[in-house]
Image (tube, rainbow, N blue to C red; front, top):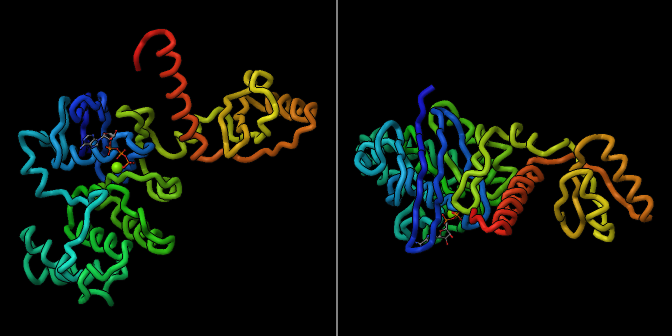
Length: 311
Ligand SMILES: Nc1ncnc2c1ncn2[C@@H]1O[C@H](COP(=O)(O)OP(=O)(O)OP(=O)(O)O)[C@@H](O)[C@H]1O
Ligand SMILES: [Mg+2]
């Protein structure tokens, strides 16, 4: 399969702020790839560099086989982008926004009209098509931008937090459309939403502090958690009593302990009983695995700091 995106040792600094610190990854054609990471991780910076709207500081990046710096014009013809904080033109209607965008991309009037109608209907904007977007809600504006990107028939589509601000129904409608594009286009999107990752991602790239912490399918990353269950315990039980039985992190005012094996689960249950504490056992989720990967990264950084090595 063709590597649509190849990123090697990508760095980006804004002044003395290092936003990307040597990212490397490969994205294959036809997949939906999700960049997942906390606020400020570098997702938008990375997407903007791949979409050629921002220059990198250093590194080797190829998109669709072209170099993002010297051959950006070739890339721009074949991609579509929904930026994180993009706004629609408030004076244009949804129809004018999508149709005009397609004409500007060189699509014929007839094909543009057909595609505009199809995508406005798909995104639930058909009845609003003749109203200027200044009168739309935030979610309607967002859907207009998504309609523009999808109508462009691009090989590669970047969507920076595409469903932020959408209600649960609109969010699912967007997911259904993105699903339909699978195989026909490659989608690279960023999100904070776990349900979005689970609903869409063929591949997840977890980023924090400008570094790739992990990459894989949801189920591969899910099994980075030591077991498939977690024990929720009150924080009155001291950590030293628990720490040898698994990985512990805070979970909404309780400890969530991921036991290393079944025997450890039983030991932990016994400890809770000795403390007269109530506990519950739950199935570990993808979100647990994600938080664990972030937690382990933070701990490793702390340890390196203690030994005078910077992360
Ligand atoms: N124009 C800029 N000038 C200075 N620093 C910037 C600029 N843009 C981003 N940064 C910094 O770079 C880092 C990465 O920002 P970026 O927007 O890429 O993160 P993100 O993962 O998209 O975050 P979010 O989830 O909040 O959208 C942050 O520390 C941010 O403050
Ligand atoms: Mg962002």
